[in-house]
Length: 128
Image 1 (cartoon, rainbow, N blue to C red):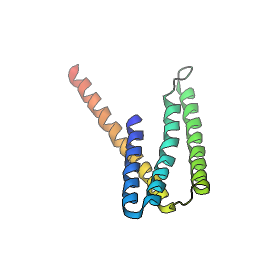
Image 2: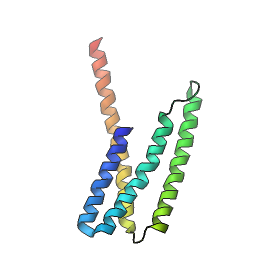
Image 3: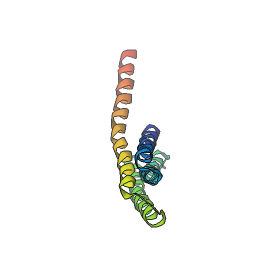
Image 4: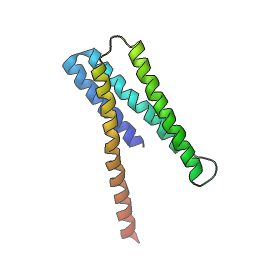
């Protein structure tokens, strides 16, 4: 989870620097805010899933996932609302570009976790 969050943050900052270099500082900080609008809610969800729960079984995990996903959605709405109401001037296109870059990094996380799983499975099979 940490690798994916760091990947999201890193890619978002690269996009922010690209916008800053090509379109100016307003676009740069707008893209950075968009990236944070993606990373902060995802970090909340990751923490909800990583916190130890009482009891075993699927019910506590499902409750944590449901609560985490609702919190993630609420945080995303709140952060976009704050950005559009309090940040002046704001480049909306750059804001959404930073957000989308963070979301795309989530998909790269699927490939990271698969590579890690394959490596562990392969090493365990050879060690037995």
